[in-house]
Image (cartoon, one colour):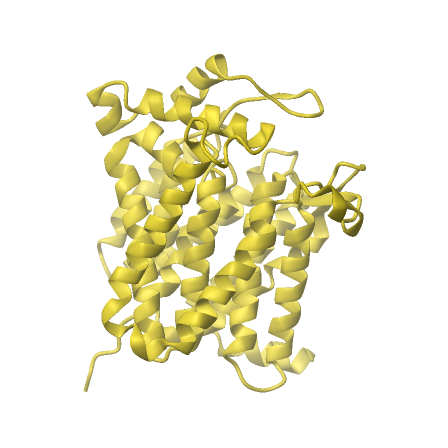
Length: 400
């Protein structure tokens, strides 16, 4: 075992070895005082080294290194809800992932798949009879354990986002690899998904399964999708946006289903109303935190334990739309469309590993963003979101 681990490490180039810092960043949760300071330090170090490697081959990356340097003060200054550096981390991580060689990604995927196991070092467990009631089906309540978990102080939903995404990486490695080593990947996937389920997040429980089913279906009919990749990608995003409208429309079929969904709907309506109340707000946004503070005064979100929370949009794209305007939100949606299209093209070219992992992750990250503001507050989720989206953008192999 030790010899195999050393052999794997020696085969990695320096770009792939740096990805070991991503699971290592979770160890920083053992040192922190609930602020995420040390984890952010490790992630900024990872980004800086990654950008520096790219800058040695492409001078344009020196500008991104400057952007990272200028953002440091804001990165380490806690924001109540939303900050421009949230999207900057996503952008920088996406930039250092785009154009990597397929072999580099194949090595990095094994490292990323281990994040679920590493998270075991810092699990927090919440006990109580109402800890896992996310199914909202009383007859099935006895099936669920009487606790839920989160990684350190990372909120349940955002812990589920992190664990659900790495479970898909583990499944893809198991599905499209040969030999005994693939069962390690299956173990990584099972642990990550089991922990994601125990966070109590509905999206973390159901979206990984739905994403895998869609990826398997597309892989089975890969010969039929080559000329329809863009159309299919747009269709998936359109379906998600329509479903989101059903949740957040006033008196919609889903918003009236429960008090929780009704509260989400009222917060979303407040965000949308504020984002569209003037042309400047529509085009350039309101700036980070401003809409959240405004809606905090307009909508009271009361939890079952009596807490009153500061509202966020419960939707990544609506949050970006309200904070930074329609152009920023459109660009974010376009990145998801193009990433799904690229993944479908990889599948059509019979690249099962990167294609199906990129596709299932694209679906999971996009649809999870419809239920929660996944790009806020937690630096490792912001970095992983950008980096994982880049899986569908590998270096092109020129035809000889």
